[in-house]
Image 1 (cartoon, one colour):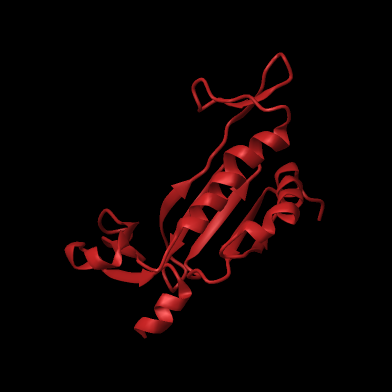
Image 2 (image 1 turned 45 degrees about the vertical axis):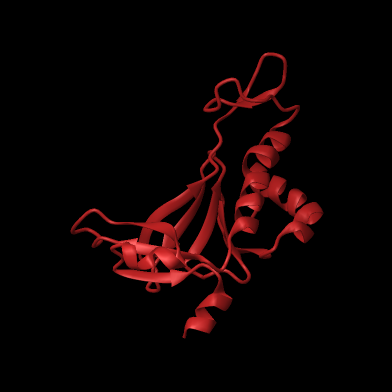
Length: 166
């Protein structure tokens, strides 16, 4: 299957920057318009989906695969200006980039790398509410604050932290 622009841009970017990741990304799903990353060492319930239309979100699922929430996004609404520069329409007064690829790298891939690298063993996912019955979602919380949350289920972001608590 031919790869779309965003996937080709990611592939080129990751070849140069894979060594910078604390948790190595790998492509778990690849479709015509979207691809999904997972990260070695992080819980399997965390996925990062990037779509050609500009959606770039970190999802949380439970162990059965049920969607709970988006906990972070790096969305981009690309626009080419008359001078040939690219900007994100959602970023008022935002920086202009010389190419589409440069916009995606700076607006999506670099911030995602920084966010992923900042995750640590003290962060857990708190699932709250009841899907399709009440308001529900997921949030990242410090492990020391878990007791103060109304979680119906919680788990560590780092796989090694899960092994230590099992």
